[in-house]
Length: 235
Length: 248
Image (cartoon, rainbow over all chains, first blue to last red; front, side, top):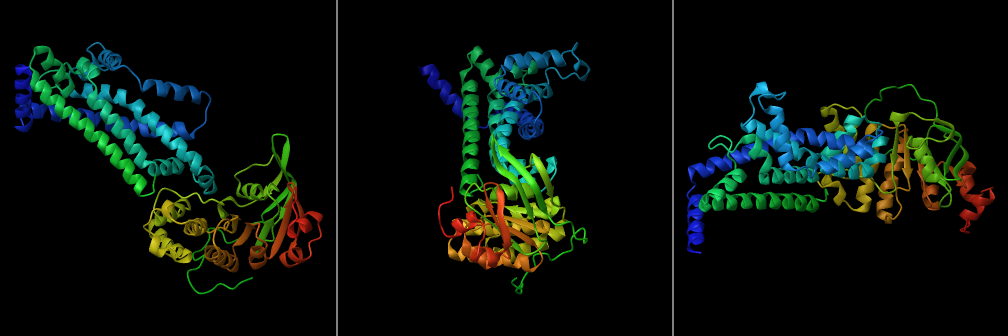
């Protein structure tokens, strides 16, 4: 127990002392996950909105596939992206393997279905409510989608934050395509796995505490956004 | 018809096309729900000006008639004559966007294709018309029932409609809120906007309408001047309805 106690004390020292290595890992984690979430929003928001407002044969199947993709196993995504960016893969010449770019790509693939599916649900509910009014305006489909995305912005922020939470907590995919290289592709989750396997609990605990704090902050932000929307009667 | 009082005008900027369009009309329109004909060969010719009240019992097809006129429902048979971009519909329960009061008006003006500078000016006018200046920054969905309906009504005027369709706009409103809505409707008519108003309120029809079309079982049972139909209806259904008897 004394060992654990020491580890906690050292972890607190690392976290509170703003250890350089620790800050580098946290910074890279945030950069990778925020970039991946932004990329996922760029694709997922319009994709989800279009799925909500358009009617085409096979739409129900497309929605079912999208919902199923929310549970994509990270290691499978990691393996797929590895095959894509490895030297003999189609994106091999870009030399993305073991770079933050490959990690961003892998996390974006994981997060996009989450953002798209939550967007589809939000926009579909709004579309049902606004349908007749928007039709009386005789406005085009782009105007309609723009209206729905803007009016669903608070719920869609929740979708983006849910995606960010998923990206921050993900380990399997970034481990495979990033390689967990110190000062290059080591992020919080892969560092925790490595340090724990080495028995270096102080760094693992410090990073774990920061990761949990970030996750709680994301959850608090989601709740705050929703409460603010409700308070303003926008929800 | 009432004269327009001083204040912001409904149609304060020019229309895209000044030539008068053909008068809106429904000819032998049929709409079915399952096996039941909810509009059963309905013919309604609008005069091109003034206020026409659609009256009749629940299920007569009044709201459906408005939706067909607004282009929201396509009839299975029959003909609809309307000018899409010059027709506006206000629902019984207003659909307000998750934006401020001014944001709702700006959205409708943007849909009408107006430039930002014109939108700002026009928003001010519409706020004044609806008596909503003090509420312009408030979320529209936090408004009271009367305020919400006033917003929906002036928002419908954003696109400079020639034909304004109102589906029981004062249902469940108190007298003060009803008077505010009726005042705007009267101004619309005075400034040349043709109004079709669904109402169960005989007094409201008497106050606002020039003409009454009485609907029963998906058809126009009787149509004519409001003064005549409200006092001396000739169809059996209109007589029963206006005497307060139950029409089944």
